[in-house]
Image (cartoon, rainbow, N blue to C red; front, side):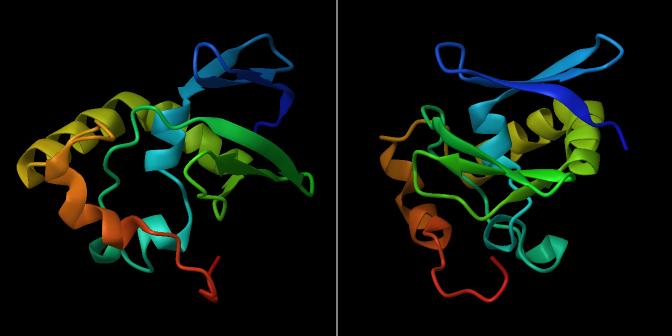
Length: 138
């Protein structure tokens, strides 16, 4: 498990940066992190239950909280706050970032949805994306 020595939030660039002891770093756009939240309300309890995340181009990161010594809880401007991003999950995201993003864009196109928060085509997907308060798997 690779643990960062610094966690930087770049608001203007809309990126979270992890800096490691060996001098390497990785940047994640806020939108990418929100789309690939590890929470059950995004990923479901099985791959077939994943909810397509739409209209998140402008999402901001409004909070970062440590979870023990193994993870971060990220809080987003759209109210999503149930994802716990372990250091291992960040490593996986870094390794698969380009492929995940390409597949996400293809899924959006196939569904007729978009990253644009004001796109009327996103309306059918928005109800599924609403935070499930009271869900036992937050």
